[in-house]
Image (cartoon, rainbow, N blue to C red):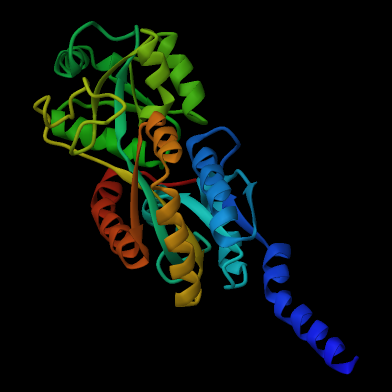
Length: 317
């Protein structure tokens, strides 16, 4: 009897770690509302990680401050791998140059886990711009300076400063018109209230396919797979490029074995055809890189944007 009781006790004890893992819930924080590219990618990852990590994984949307609020929350979270943030690069490589009291150090306060995808930006013309390619539209803007405007999803964003780099490279002074999100910017573009828009391809790609707007060029070094017929700016004769990325981050001090375990699961998730197909539809590129490579990319982008932002004179409110 005692042997049977001991065996039962031993079996139940061995089962505890698995049961404990099932009871724990990993949260992927997203600093943007449901339905956008960050949210969709996080949910695709969560579905795969539930299986590969053997535990519950949820997406927790906490919109605010262009993704900076959730990074502040991540900074305060325990370094146990149960709280992560899927962040676009802007909050990590643009915001540090704009805010004197950001509330977090983008390098010291977080553990890079995985780069998930990379993306470029679309330069899109609406009915308020003349027909023709990007050079024709820019020439029209130069001849009509009062109409030389470009819309973006917000001030202090990567598209904001990508538009400024375009303006400098083309030698055409353009006025930035900031909106509270890509959707209202795209609506004003469609309505002819602003002639040009610089933002992620996901904001205008469906309108482009429907013939309501025209994506004239993309800012990447290579053509966007979702827009194979659209040239890069360099192909169009404008020497300028800009790109960005989505990264998965944990709090500072996340143990190396935990980081590696999650990273392996992310890498496997990104190989799934259904995940790749969905990511591509947003104009993004599944582009996994492990922790050290993500950190190197982040630091390189930080250095890259320092001078353009400082020279712009833009100050965040």
